[in-house]
Length: 157
Image (tube, rainbow, N blue to C red; front, top):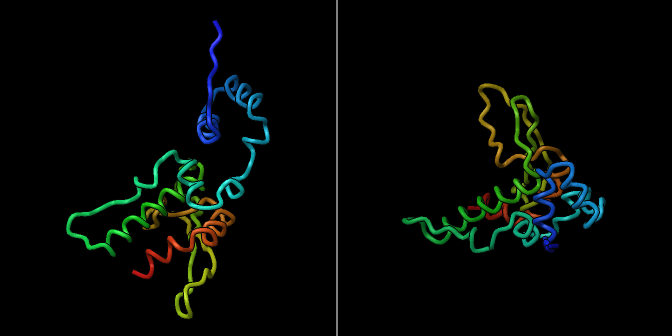
């Protein structure tokens, strides 16, 4: 008895990341090897791509905190969007002690403009937030340009 399994692109990529060698080979035969080597910066064009890759609905990002007004709830929703986007960009990478963590910086003195990225190394006394950091400069720059509206919603509160 033969059965057919259907996978959408985002599910196939998620399964591929943790698949056994045999299952990876089967996925590569069906989707093509290039499909799994495409860079995350090429796969993400806007926030809908982030939602598709992470497998969640846009309504999952809308949080209503009791006692917060609409503006404060918008900031919370933008922070959740940023965490989700960073997680997708880092493709499951978990920071270890001593890893460089890249963060975007914006110039708000003459309008809201992406300025640069920077990194910090973690030490015992560092208070950098790994959930908001990128594993390399390229990912950080791509995020800063494509998702400036998320940062603006957080910073200009």
